[in-house]
Image (cartoon, rainbow, N blue to C red; front, top):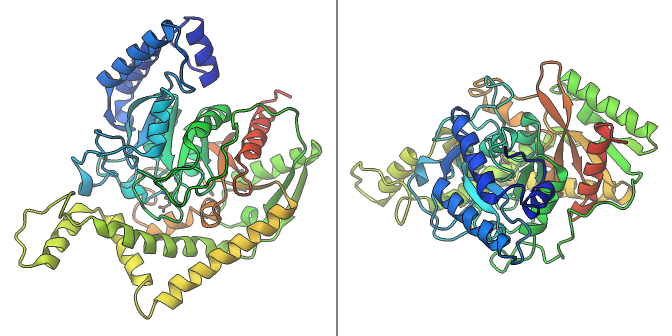
Length: 480
Ligand code: GLN
């Protein structure tokens, strides 16, 4: 029987002929079939994945050099383009749309011989925190099916959580990789803004959007990042910084300088047990000779409003391209003029949350309100960046909870958008400042649900972030 532990172990088993790519794809296809009710996948490319696997098996057996992700079974979120495959952003607006090109991240995966097994469910246009805003319906958390998996990359998270693929890609504009990873008990990495090309990622808020990775282990996340990161002529905001060997084992255990913001652990919305879990961890880190300092953070209450003003503003502009003229949903209602034609297409094609955000964004950008909202939020963003630079001049990492609570019950926050937005309090900081963040599955709540520790580092410090994460994970499992 096929058993997966990590990419490295899998590659070892392939080299020793103990398994094959075909066997692994068959295994995942049958798991996906058994887990259909979780609704994690919106498309599964069964025949194609089997054909690719057979070709890869033949290549490997003929002794040819294999790619770095040879036979690795990957799932992608429904906002990432894969040429000649369906792409809908979980929206009625793009139902039946087929990608005409592949995202750079996808091209890089394929070049290294990964197998894309299917497309995962998500919140419409990546807007949401529960995966309840999807035209395909909600996704169930495999640990407790009465709960949400988080969002917006809920399907990608469950695909890894329930063992339906080896790693998956999501996108993180305000926490959509880290928060579902936290809710599902897996690793979720959001790299630095600009570390991975956004070419072929459906735009939500372009100055925040970043492709992220879900994995069972830090090591797998590092290995995948190593492949998909890097310069790209199709994205002018992507960094030219060299890509480091993110999967490299650290030479020695290190002592780190951690900072945390007092206010984050005292916030009234934070679940008591999550606060206790993180405080206990801080004590243990200190006992292990790490430095952990409490800093004050005067901006905590401003970050969610700033995030929602800026992202809805960017979204209102980005989503104006969906007008039903060249592609996308087109209403059958007769229209008297072009404006009415747009109105029909957009009102029928978009879901409720997306329309709410387009209206919010249009409002904060409108004459008279621009200075009161948009400019102010930009100033908050600048202050946060300055604060971050200051913190990282003295510390290696910032520690924070990933989410103020464990996975919500289905429907719990669905009618209260403000409560839903406020739950992003710990994740949006990294997107506003562009720094990388990772959610590490380190804790279990007394109600049986997992929760994570969020670790952030300064920009482009993914190597240290991943090495420290690995060290913390090993340590929390009592390996040393
Ligand atoms: N929950 C946040 C939002 O709804 C995050 C979304 C994301 O990261 N794509 O905007």
